[in-house]
Every structure is written in structure tokens, then in C-alpha cells.
Length: 226
Image 1 (tube, helix red, strand yellow):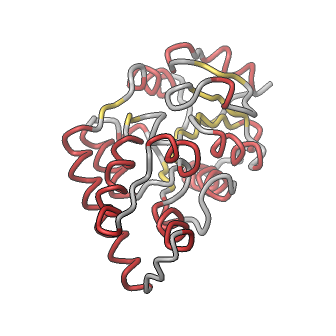
Image 2: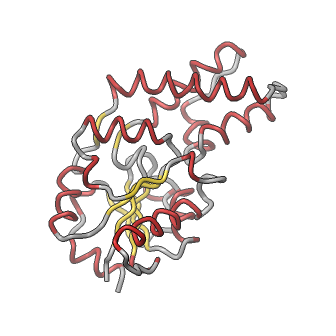
């Protein structure tokens, strides 16, 4: 039986992956590096900012100091915040689906590789923050997806808050990338893939694949957990 839903953020709740891509390229421009949109979606979606910067530093042999890397993390966060404050859009069907879950008293959490400040800013700006009882962001985990630690932490926070014992198999994760789906599987959770960022053929393993959250009902979510 369905007892909790955990959402990825970028690409599931908000149309923001292209804004992250743009913000990264703004920072990398001074190094003569640009990441194509295809490479970004093929390789980097699911990573935290820190993981991406450290990987590029290694691959391009930039030999950045820890202080330089920390400065890049901050600069990228500022760039994304400026873009998102004007351009981030909540994906169609999201508010209605969150209300459906809330009306049925299903606890919700966010588990994302984005920074907490970014998540809070966008959710509050869209009047959606109060739907979520827990948020796990990049700062709270050592490794991003496909590592399952973020999802397991999100479930722990939900259980701690409600003094409940929701099992992973009673929790549905909603994701838009294969890295997130792999993390959900590794956490022992059910997973729904939404085709906002990738075609259905690239979204495996998932228990159900949809084009829009409006396709989901409480009945079919319960069936996934049975």
C-alpha cells in the first residue's frame, strides 16, 4: 500500500535542467570549456554540482585548488539562482498531483542533487513548499544518484517526523533519469519514470512510465505498492 512519495526536483517538479546547463557553461567559459546540451543530459544529470566540477577538473586536467573549486561551486549557485528566479517553471500537472496526494494524506519529500537554497526558493515562489515534509539536497549526502543514500535519508526523515515505520517498498519515487531510477531501485523503492527529460526507452528500470503526473491516480499508485 502506498504510504509515501519522494520526488526528484529538477526535471520532475520544475523545468530547470537547461538552466543548470547554462549556469555551468557560464562558469566554464573562462576555462575555454563548454558542455553541449546533449553531453549534459547524457553524462551529468543526476550529479551534484560538486561531483560535476570535480569530474571536469580531473578530465580536463585543470588542476584546480580546493579553494578554486569552492569558489566555482558558489559562482555556479549564484548564476543558477539568477536564472531560476526569472525562468524556472513548475511542470504542468505538478500542483494538481501534489494536492491529490495531500488530500489523501500521503506524506511527500524531495530528494535532489540540487542545493537546498535553490529548491526552497523555487518551491516557495510557486507556493508549493508546504506540501513537502522533508527535503534532501546535495549538501546532505556524500554521493549523488545512482547512490541510494539520498532516498533512504528522505524516507528516514519522513518516518522520524511522523513517528511512523514506512518501509521502502511502500514508498514511490518519481524520477526523470536513469540515475535516479537506479538509486530508487537500490533503495528498495518503487519507481515511476516521467518523460520530461528522456524518452521512455532510456528510463529503465521503472515500474511505470508516464508523460505527465496527471496520468497517475491513487488507485494505480497503490497497485504499484501491492
